[in-house]
Length: 149
Image (cartoon, rainbow, N blue to C red; front, side, top):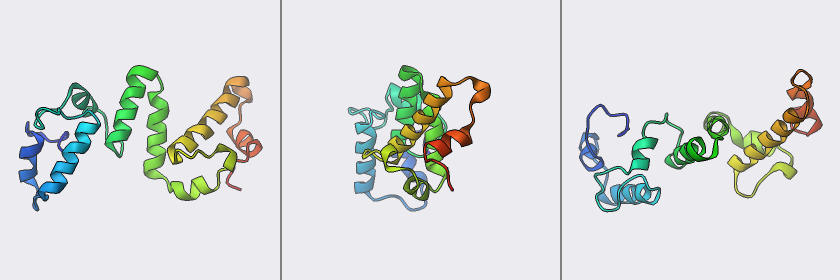
């Protein structure tokens, strides 16, 4: 909300605009989390870091940690598109039901995000190994046990 504000204000001043001002422990915890993510200066909680300012320009990706991951993927890893797709899947779909139907060999202990990344990598590996006109997503999903039926 702060990053989308037309008001040029800082986090501490912004809290005044809430109808019910958050209690101080919640504000302190939020600032600590932003500092841990490297988005807010540790010396002045009123200032965003360079990373924080850059991430504020991204569309809302459901969480700041996801935004940070996408930013890193875009700037350093050249896989931002993949993370944006996965972020969209996780924020829109009922992933609990979908994840349950994925064969255990693709599931990751690290969580749903990594499980979806595994599935996506399996499909992309097949796609990269056959001529474009021969690639059929339904056939690949059926062969890998990833179809809904």
